[in-house]
Length: 521
Ligand SMILES: [Mg+2]
Image (cartoon, rainbow, N blue to C red):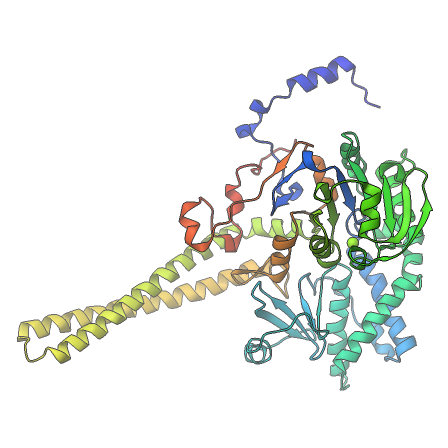
């Protein structure tokens, strides 16, 4: 209960004036921002749906992964006959990032850009050299729909990726002839078994404080929507009892006096089997109708009938690029938001490396100019040589000497150009190394591959209307917010728009709606 009197609260409300905001804007720290690919008017949204795992509920990644590693490797030893030595594989939390691809035929892990070009590859924990990478992946078109290639879409799969690489490393080191496909199948089924046989959930439920982050803003964020009449629902693949346990825990931690998390939601769909939920689904089972309509199974049509809201007025929030976002986008007109908890680390590293990035962009610009200069001088030299050969009978000595002098000057200028180019290439390589070292030590930036968008970034840009690091970030935006996307020009239109080089994501500096400010509201 607020201790302020009604008069004080009224005065506070009246004192708030948009014209007094710095620069006439509403400041939101970058780490709390919602970023927009496709315009959304919040006032048009009538229902919000939330996935649970890694969306409403944020796991402590290192704690969870170490638990899964212990359970999954024990499963592989006991059920699949792997040597006990694999239990000594150290846990490494920073090997994998989302958007990687496992090549289960050759035992490699790949990072691709938006053109499906493989920019980095590891066999086990060792990088593939450039020639091998080109020979294996850059000559033929990779068919990502084949079973051979497995995407790393969720945060649950980061550990699986690391264990796949580490097991290959470990088994090859002791001289085993590794069946890469068989190893992948064994690892996947062992991790699945930990989820399905209850061993993983049993440990999580015995000590939830160890495995979940607290989020004190969760309840105020959901209430902000409830109080203006929006309908809220949960749609999760987790089973009913686990969903109930996790959300009870999170709501209790957010507010010890708050009871009955289900009163926050109109509908709760569990054991949803996404992405299948968005097509044929599974048989529905209504569990309870008190507080909220609580069911398991079902499909998109069933949920739509319960909601009774036009699909384009529904915003669904999830963390799985395929199961939550891409599939719902393909099968419906739901608006979509992807939660990317990694976003804030990327933003922090972006800020730290900004001076290097500016130098790199300056170098790249000079590099392009130098290439033009080099090409022009080479062409002029060829023209002069040709002119001298073909017109030798007509030219007098002074004319021939003028050509020679110009060729000498061009040679000197070309030499200077080459020296400058070598210096630039070396500096740029060092700058790239310094930038990469602030991001993942194995894969660099999550959203970039070289100068291009990574495949992960492209999937987010093309399939999610908006993206942000946490559900609670909605609390920084009012119910009448209009989230508008940046104008992204075609390369031939770039001179028309005041944005930076989009390849390097520096254009956020020019975003007009939510500039970075010193103080939070
Ligand atoms: Mg999830």
